Length: 219
Image 1: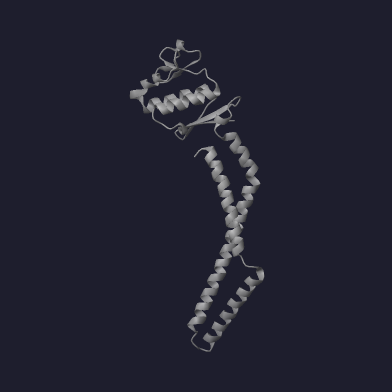
Image 2: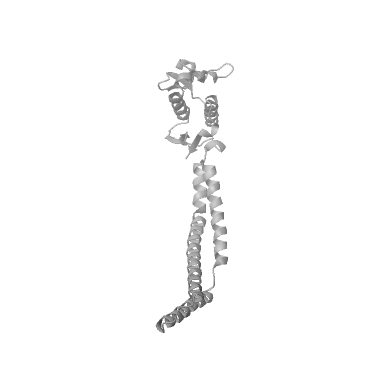
């Protein structure tokens, strides 16, 4: 799950908590009604005790009424406890909404705002790698793909411009070359931040993966 999806889920959960809290609030009874229920339960218990004391069989209806009343009281108390818990959860969401907004804004994928952003890490196939420079993300992606596709990694050469190479065994073909370890292939890394992401997605698609398998995270 990426940051955008997580943000939506957090907001959806917040709304669900609010709705459940309202429903539970409607189910609650007031203090006087609750006192009345407890008083009824006490009176029934006293009546049953009197039956037992004078050795008269306790009517089954009275026993059942006691059981039903106790169940109702237990249910109401459970509702009150759950309602209290949901109020606490709702309060937590409300108090931390600004924090969530800030965190999601800071940590979400950098594709929507790349210029001037400092790359922090890249997530590839759900594994996060720390990086220091934008050029690192292409290298890391290619190294991981080489491990998975060593036998047909040569098709990486299919990614090229009309007159320009992006992958070569000769580092002199590039302005800013970077070595893909084990593959002994160099790649061009002289790109803008936005083009780095585009190139990574193009590489993923070439090897049969969805573009969503890479997310770039900025500070």
